[in-house]
Image (cartoon, rainbow, N blue to C red; front, side):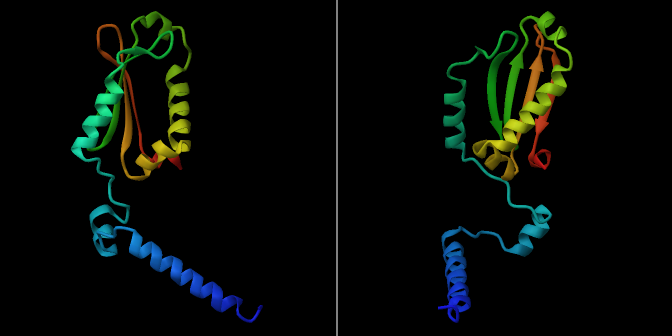
Length: 151
């Protein structure tokens, strides 16, 4: 049995490689990927009908208070990724939180990079953007997380 192990391993590897090649929808050649995307994988594209369904479901229950200080008003999805629009109805609460921007940035990076569903979109070159506004709708803070932030 030991004599046949390398041959069996090589045949198994080739069978697996062939199966992946046949099952994966190869659309771009390596040269095209290298030229068009600097060697990166192509950007994930969410079809318009699916995008509308995602947004309709996501925005159906909004606006929504997500904690004592923060209201999620709207979620958008464009060709670059997801955009979350938050508002602080009472800016005094935010003013009393030290380093909330740094804490929020660290938490979002950790959560997005470690959650398989969101990581798949990041790996597909989509990004997550967060916009925070005050009572008067003026932007207070914005943050964008992309694939590079997960390293």
